[in-house]
Image 1 (cartoon, one colour):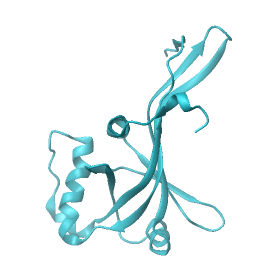
Image 2 (tube, rainbow, N blue to C red):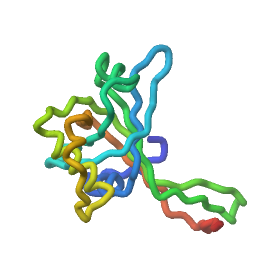
Image 3 (cartoon, one colour):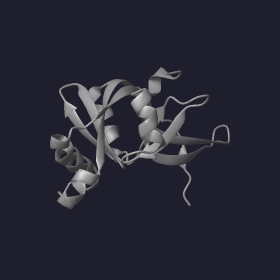
Length: 163
């Protein structure tokens, strides 16, 4: 990270940023270019380990690439704001982000309901239920995070541009 003053080092603060994000973008190995897809997610924090859960249909390019190489990179961001800096008359875009790497594993059938519940809880903490008949036709994957860094904009004397 170039600007160390923007780096978030506290694990609890990184988890807080993750909780506010609504999409995770995962980058997989393809040839000759990476293949990136945005997906919704749920998360589980086990001590200082983050595990993301995603769902997908069976088959498709994403699944084919992950079967060949389960190592991924990921990115998520939130709190997007455009700012104007009066002192030098420039605009800047501020946001919070988390980037990292991980390894994807297929969630076994007996753990799918837990995975889907965590995913639903990320978007609907009031415990919205899902139809159990779809569990067996949905493939669930988990991303075990290897490493991650987070970034938040430093606080400067700037004015928010409103629409």
